Structures are given as structure tokens and as C-alpha cells.
Amino acid sequence: MYIFELEIKVRDYECDIQGILNNSVYQNYLEHTRHEFLESRNVSFADLHEQGVDPVVARIEIAYKTPLKPGDTAICKLYVKKEGIKYVFHQDIFRKSDNKVSVKAKVEACVIVNGKIAASHPALDGLVEE
Image (cartoon, rainbow, N blue to C red; front, side, top):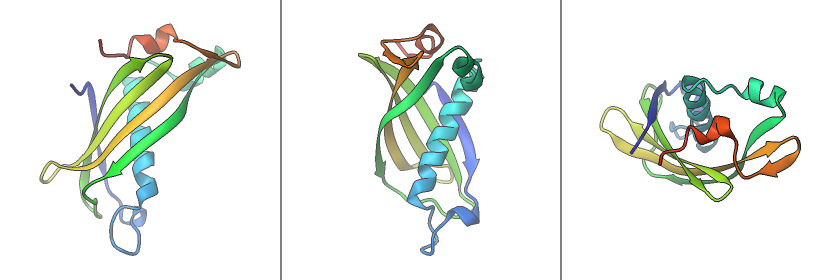
């Protein structure tokens, strides 16, 4: 099911007064994981942009399950599906110590080519799980 995973250590300055990871930081972890995934597949945002191709996030759904705390290691996992013109990243974050789900997310992205929405792009189609 998952085709990529990345470990991230929770830093104390990312946590709020309650001593848990601030909700907004999870989006950073999700985005960082997507970028590392693309880089692992030799897809560069900079190169795509120079060619007039811009993948953009259109919608994010996040369900917060188990909080992460300073010093925890998060395992961020993902797989990608194509739904119409959208590339849908299914991303889950687990707490490494006990494998509990911390976050379940669905990130919908589309691709803009030379300023216009496109149905797909070859550089991104190769990332999609069949």
C-alpha cells in the first residue's frame, strides 16, 4: 500500500504549551514527506517550474488521532492515486515507539501547466500507484 516513508524527529520548539506537536506542524511534515518522495523519484519542483509546470495543493483533509511529543520519532508514509485531474496523496503519520496513528491525511493536488489546469503530466503520472 505505502510506497514511501520518511522518519522525522519531533523538536521541542514545534510543540505548543500543552507539550504536544502543534497542529500546523503536521502539515509541514506532510509537505516535507511529499517533497522527499518526489525527490526520491527524481522529480524536482524547481525543474518543473522552469518548464511551466506547477503541482499545487487544492485541498487537505487531516484527522488528528494520537499526539506527538518532543523527542518522538514520526514515521510519515504515503501512496498516490489519480482521481480525475487530481493527484491524491494518502498520507499517514505514525508514532514510531508504538506504531500508533498520529495523523491520517488526504492531500489533493492538481497540476498547472503554463497557467492552465491540466489533466495530467508525464513527470507526475509515473508516481501514481496503479
